Image 1 (cartoon, one colour):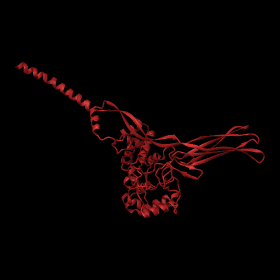
Image 2 (cartoon, rainbow, N blue to C red; image 1 turned 90 degrees about the horizontal axis):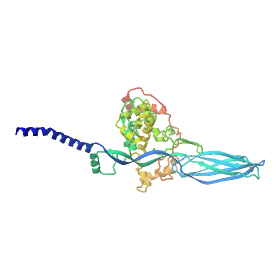
Image 3 (cartoon, helix red, strand yellow; image 1 turned 135 degrees about the horizontal axis):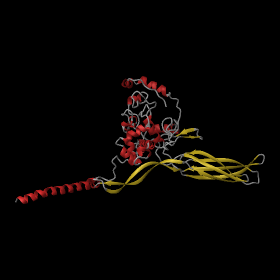
Image 4 (cartoon, rainbow, N blue to C red; image 1 turned 90 degrees about the vertical axis):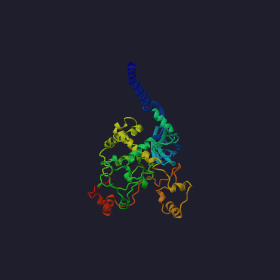
Length: 435
């Protein structure tokens, strides 16, 4: 009996080890990600492409000036069939006994519009014959596309079981794509200012249509304090919703106007990053009287140590936060993607519903629309009809006008004098800065 008892005791540690090993294997199989699989996801991203166009007509006529000098006239009419405007270039060629010569003409063509390009050549006198030809160079345009991509992911058995129990087709962030979700996180993060406390949403709040949320400030000059409470912006916070279609800033020689860009003065031209909206998103982060970060590197460092770092590298690639310039562009592009999402630019106003034939305007609304489109001529700049491609109207033609309003310093002075409540809150010297 004693011998048997000893044998049983000897067997217990061995059985315990086996049991622990079995449990460990089960836990590893269930919880350690080691099952590879392909995952599909949608991503919205800006991309550059060539604009579409057609040559409506092309003629080359030969005539003569006084003094028996010949003249060749080349006329090429180009129609922009794209949904974006851009600068088109036409090179005119003339071949005669003088040789092959060329002249280049350029012009901005709005989406859906037609432009005639003309050039004149000196040609030999009659009976020499000149032959004309042409080539058209279309511009690059920055478009948005949603593409389906795949990536290899490793999941545990328990992940696969839990995923199979979840309803399909829903994103963890209300249907946003990864780049839009990243932009949303950055947009609402108050830790991206110096000192922490101010996010993009502080001045562009969703509850007030993504513009300034403080009624007291809006009533008295409408300039908002920055992350440093004694520093004020020099213009009212514009709405960021529906700011999706502004082209890169350019000068239209035909109209004699600057068109495109972002901000009230167009300084976010989009020339360096290729997207005015992404360009605009970068500015407030480093402006002293807004979010007050000294340098882009400071903003990138804050994201490196934040909860957004993983999603940032998921969107822009592993190690993307190591390159400050590329990462800062990624910040601007992500915020722009969120602002372009249907969560921000939803086109669900009553006017959108009216254009779709789903609702009717009240009598006073109908009179106001008639005034806007008629006698008041507001519609000359604030376009109220869908574009040629069917896009909903944005009530802007992206141009700039001097309306004769008070200068920035005068507006700030009025704001500080009138808004005693705000001054009492800060009770510090205000830095007056202009852009």
